[in-house]
Image (cartoon, rainbow, N blue to C red; front, side, top):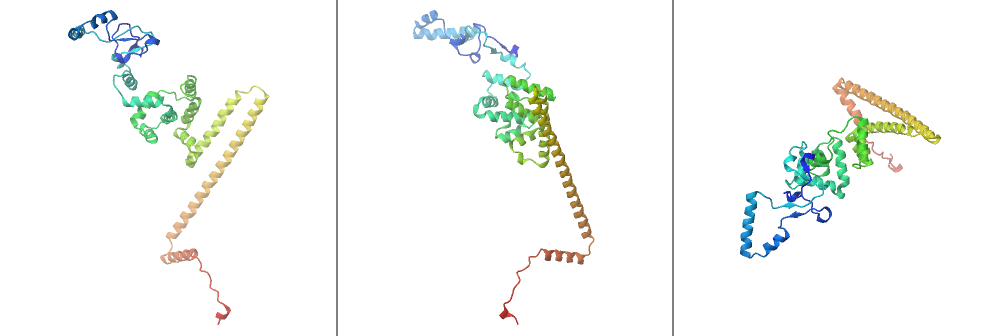
Length: 326
């Protein structure tokens, strides 16, 4: 990218769209006028001679291929982009961003992505889009959830959330996001979300937003993850022990962890017992249905009648008075 930009030189014909207008702070000036002494002479010309002079002057500029705009002294802090060198970059969306930034080619989706990122009113939505991108959802799925266009999500993803080359190894991934936190690119809360998504995928987002909407199978996965998270905390505490108090707290955590796994095995036992009962019930039902298939038609009608009579509600008995008895 260094080859695509350079500091402007004094007297160069940089286009107006490249220049920063800050005469006082940076010394940047854009000149489209004559020098002061020459301007006095031009002002002294009559209207007829002034029109003739302007025609001859512009004709001379066109013939010599000189540009009307010139810049004064620049500080080295300012850079201008060479449009001819931007095409040499490999990133398609970076080229679109640069073309849009220098007013060479207006891009509505780039404009939206940059404005959306800088908007304080959409800061949390912008972060949530990044979580969904890291979870592997498509642009169309994310756009449908946030009521945006897929092209807008694509621009946000390519400019700010391109995780194509992010490390997959857990240790490298932890170092990668920790470095982003240290560089103030993301917050520590963002790092925890990315860790959750890396280990559970989209299920991590669903569990965080509405745990009760999960299926029984998904809840089992979340519970297993929480147990593993306790192990992570145990390792962290192990490296933080410096005195007797820390050691006692560490032992308490170990006891709680052991109790957790005991309860977990009990839950697995009762789940297996429930599945066994369900299987037994299904087997008995299947055997009963198989027996009914071999019943004679008359016996089948009799069984149906017995079932209807058994389910029929008994009427309230009618008791006669003494005077009504024979």
